[in-house]
Amino acid sequence: MACSAAAKIIHNPLLLSSSRSAEKSDSGCKILGPSSFLGSASMSKKLVSVNKGVSRVSRRSANVVAVSSDVVKEKKLKSSSAASSLLITKEEGLVLYEDMVLGRVFEDMCAQMYYRGKMFGFVHLYNGQEAVSTGFIKFLKKEDCVVSTYRDHVHALSKGVPAREVMSELFGKTPGCCRGQGGSMHMFSKEHNLLGGFAFIGEGIPVATGAAFTSKYKREVLKENCDEVTLAFFGDGTCNNGQFFECLNMAALWKLPIVFVVENNLWAIGMSHLRATSDPQIWKKGPAFGMPGVHVDGMDVLKVREVANEAIARARRGEGPTLVECETYRFRGHSLADPDELRDPAEKAHYATRDPITALKKYILENNLASEAELKAIEKKIDEVVEDAVEFADESPVPARSQLLENVFADPRGFGIGPDGKYRCEDPKFTEGTAQV
Image (cartoon, rainbow, N blue to C red; front, side, top):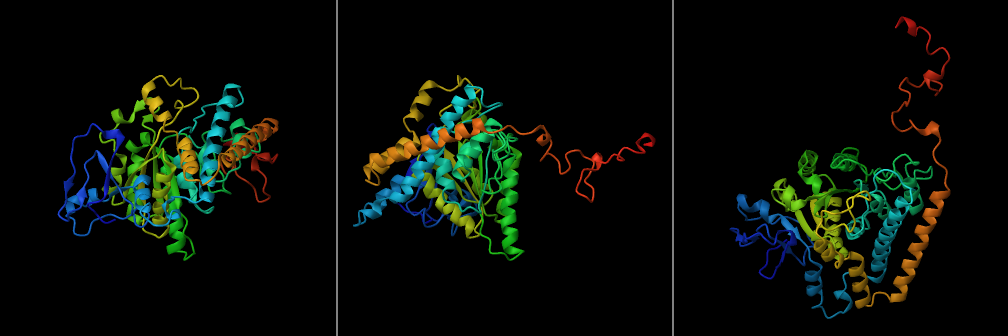
């Protein structure tokens, strides 16, 4: 990405208190201080580090890039063609809107069903963060993999898992994507290459790294035509854990086709990100391992989409991993068991005004990509899909008791399977001779 005097500097709202100023490298490129990042209109063309002619000391800092939809739009508006000023087509806009509305309406329904006693255990909702899931996952192919967290319902929906299957899983019913055994935090779908939600923070990152290694192994060792990419989603609270650093190192070392997506909603349960991290700028950890680090406004699906497009394409081209920090906000407590009393009401009110769905709807209408009636039709359709999912889940059967130990061990009874395919422990002669043992 070329350094330019015209490049727009955008300040990170997380770090407005920082007073460090930008310094200049030997090449004339700006090495950004911790309170700002570079918004580039050329991001969609190239996401690479600026290190030619830059001193060894400054190379890591020069690896930081980010995107602003405003910058992209500003540049494109100079074109004589009105159509070229648009960041998305009508078809793309409607796909994005439908996916984000599905995520929001589905999660709102989950809250209702939880409080009615239809769901059990912890349920973590995604409200407010829809721009991240939609912005990234809608660029994937079916063969690409997604690894999620305990806040995984919307990632599953964006990846194509039917709402009926996700809701049934939340209800603990047999038609669920994990046959009712996974519940809220453990969504999985082999068909859609959703490799799981994970209850513990950070435990999905090694799985995602392994999936990316599989893609590289297929292509380079088995000589298969494989360009599959893996997305690893996780939160800001994960970024101080060992698995995160180990996997960044491994992915950069082997140039794995993976994008590490940090959904920084500013809070790790009740701990403020600013209080828990020595350097709150998570994207800076990318250059430390030799990969691009990107900061983007996670409340704007168009900005997220701009970054996602190049990061995924870069991985697909075999150019290695990217670390993307999406600064976002959850509109509900950590889980439905959280009274959400620790966050400042003013902070919550501020982010409520930046609702990503409202922002996308405004962009679509202002640019005449679709009419109010078309968007209302999508909202009506989603309401019906979610209502149908609830009815289907409620009427579906619970798993049989015999299913309890399935998918726990290869042999759930722990005694092996005989040549006839039956469990050895079911053989009447199985216990003969045990008295001598």
